[in-house]
Image 1 (tube, one colour):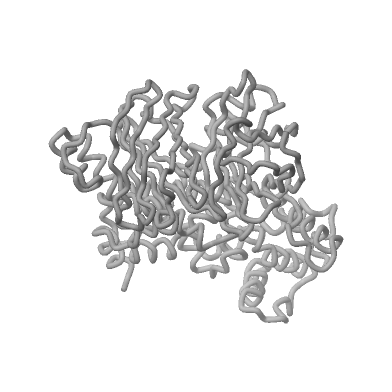
Image 2 (cartoon, helix red, strand yellow):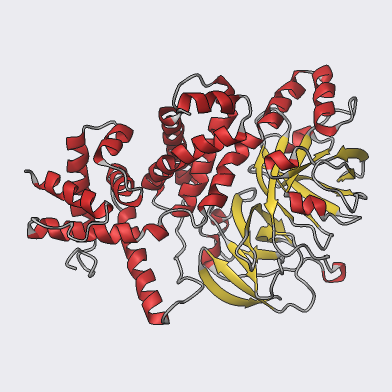
Length: 181
Length: 342
């Protein structure tokens, strides 16, 4: 069943069709949100908001794919969030080691520290840089897919990806994460 | 081939799981690829922890569509309201007023005790608590999805209205639905609401997402299941309260806060008192929090900042702490600490 058919089924209340649409698009929205806010919890909340808005207006939606529409909603939400954040500045809480420490506490802490450092650096990139890296490396998208999602040429995507990794490396130069190993 | 293209192809190989992804790269490109590999391996810190649960959250709005349509009809006039009320509540002609749809997990609906009590507090954004009501009523002990539940609602002004409610399409939705109607349209307009059951040992429900469309005077409250059940509030001791003297707790306006008892299957109530400046905790500010059961199940909740006993507090969960519980395993976005219940 193609996306247009799923949309048609979802419009008449088919939950399975809605779930399929959700499965098809949530990662892209989440990546976009993460690229804007640089925080998993907030990205989750904003993604949920985006889908809530989608469903609220779903009856009026007439397209054959919801991707671009969702992206517009998501971008508006992230803009609103920036505005709201100006009014109520947020301060991220530190992450913590996993509840189940695994092999040794030291190893777990080290891994957690490494990841935290990496994710923190990712959060300092420009939104487009963050988006291209998360789409490519977290979501495993091809250049062609990223090109389609970000509406850039494949060449531009590759260049953006390269610059993003360079910038990330500069941000991590003080640590052993800078790509030496 | 340009460096960007070479690196991109190497990343493609990395994504395909090739061990020799970095062949033929310059030293600089190798470093960037190593960084890409690190990022790839940090996926666990990127995606939602429980993707299935997260997708259910995303679908919640879709599942509420019948109620959205109902709200529109409701706003259109009394006649439509009666029709929709018939659809939703199974009793046409009931009095007008906003309805709070409380979605219950089917298991909870099936295990609802004989005399549950709902307690809900509505808030308007940016204002202090605007309304509260207590709904106490007999429910059928064997009420399963689709079975009727009887609920009476007491508004804070002591006005009492009978509220028939029943789970709706629980099998289809994955939730039961209890609709509570109460006469305070202005109190909910554009606001938020959270609700808990204060009794019912096996009642696995907590308030979560509230959608209060502007101007409609109707809020939809979505809930999801809690593991371990609910425990009766020790009224003599008041609500269990946890005062956390850490400024880090109140530094964020939104985000998840996980709370967990150190005793198996014991959800509990906590109340945070902020030591942060008032600016960081504006009254009416809402937080989204998440109750985590010992089996890992999670229940998202809404909470808000209020003045409690003259002190600014973040009220998180109303579920009571079992008597005798002295320590709680407490996670704040992953930061673990053990704290005593005062």
